[in-house]
Length: 332
Image (tube, rainbow, N blue to C red; front, side, top):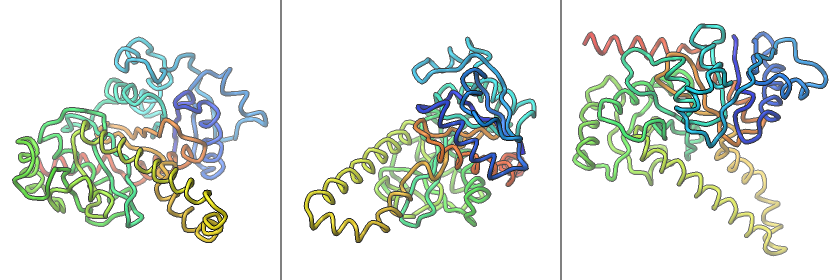
């Protein structure tokens, strides 16, 4: 398998990206890894030499986090992100990973890699932690702020296939984010989406309120990108605040420090389950090639897990399965 990574994407690039791909190259020695970026910045980070299954694909340009996505992709045709998506398109690599500008990665994916036939809009699909420990796949969380009912139906189909193939969930339960669980709740678009999801050959469990997302009520949660992004950012903020307050309380007194020492193993497990680094990244489902958006703050461990995720994406044939299911539904 051949996996390419954007050496210049993310808050800690290129150091974290290079260290993460080094770990991956050691783990999967039969795979080939490609670091895309300026050789003068990347090569010095491998003082002991490149692993035998890693090469650098030199490109002098990259897209920064604050650049306007579409303009940047069109102007910087040889940017690392654009080149990575192009390599997937022409089959030179099997998957591409970037922790860079989310909007630019979506634009590069659309312009260079293209969409799966029958999919109107790709969706960004991270895994949210939940009480079960296996997590809930949520899409879309920001790739497309506005959506129509048939877009949500496409998200449901893609999410169900990804949850089964990559996350290993049999017959995934699909829910629709709404302001209430009753069928008649929500906007007209959400009501229409409910009707469409009910007619699909999926395990649709109905509407899901945001307060229940972490309670293992569904395996796949479908929403428009605007609502999904608010849910994502709110969840990240609450988790950070909760952990910060726990640290404050457990270091307040001698007794609380003693209690923290006793509870430390459990607290570490809890923190790990809610750590984005363990999940690696979010696939851009709907593109015609495997593209993974890693968290902007990814460290080496997160990059390693993003590679693991990309490998499963390719091995389990997610895109061919989405294409096959779309054709079957269209044929009736």
